[in-house]
Amino acid sequence: MSYDANVLRRATRRLEEESRLRRDKTERLRQDAYRREPRLEQLDRRIQGTMAGLVAAALRQGGNPVQAVQSVRAENQDLQRERAVLLGAMGLPEDALEDSPACPLCRDTGWQGAQMCRCLKALCAQEQIRELSRLLDLGEQSFDTFRMDYYSQTPYPGRGASPRGNMELVYDVCLNYATKFGRFAIKNLFLSGAPGLGKTFLSACIARTVSENGFSVVYDTAGNIFAQFEARKFLRDSPDGMDARDETRRCLNCDLLILDDLGSELTTQFTQSALYELINTRLVGGKHTVISSNLSMEEAARRYAPQIASRLDGEYHVLHFFGDDIRLVRKRQL
Image 1: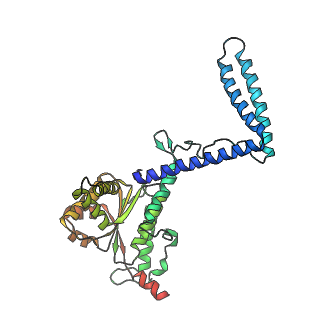
Image 2: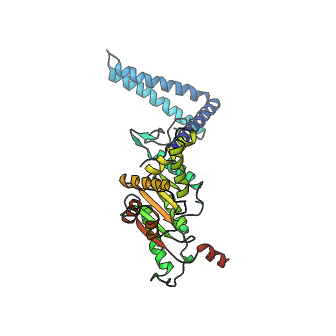
Image 3: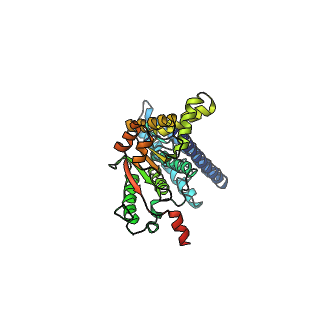
């Protein structure tokens, strides 16, 4: 999985800051303990000296190095016991003054060799949620808060099923897609239906769950994403153009792209080209994409170029949304 450079930078900065604050707290505690009990500082210095003595004894030539090591070790243990007694009298555990890392796996570096440690992954996931929250109201949007009672159980004309029955199936697919991301049989989703039927809500649920599981997610509207592609091309080496280049790279390379409201943009030759690059590059790279649109797949085929329509029809699993506008249903229930 790959994280956006800005997300990784913020997460790394947080890891370093938390480590620094922890060291500062330990140092303050150490200095306070030394003031309260000066003997502790003397013991710590002697213990450091005996550790150096252990190394010297092990390297000593002549005499009996084993006996020398045992002698130094015995002295060190006596000092440690006295130190533990003094700390206990102050209500502190034996390791209270040690600079122990929060993560024993990476010792707060964030990396285990070339692999990102789970502590840094967790911070990256938090930073992604924070970034997504700037575009989405993620306060209550989760699979646990999704309400089926907004959907009628009466069969919907021309559909052969009720909105409730259909939504139960849609919900199950979206839930499994998110919780089993990367392992689920379906890679790409096309959420199709009129406004106000829950497409954005379920898209946000997917974004939240996949992010919390440590994958990189980009969520944005089709109009905003196409504007970034346009800025990348026409502004080139300007600051805005370089920012757009970074943003388009994120869209092309993230683990999951959620493209919201496809079809609301002004369709031009350029947007067709940008959409093709986006869809095709992600398919070739094996990346996952969720598209939500007011268009049906048939309407998308008429609106976009055949190369785009073919990839959408062949590589995306369509989830149909139908029923009454949830906003109006909620208003009637007030």
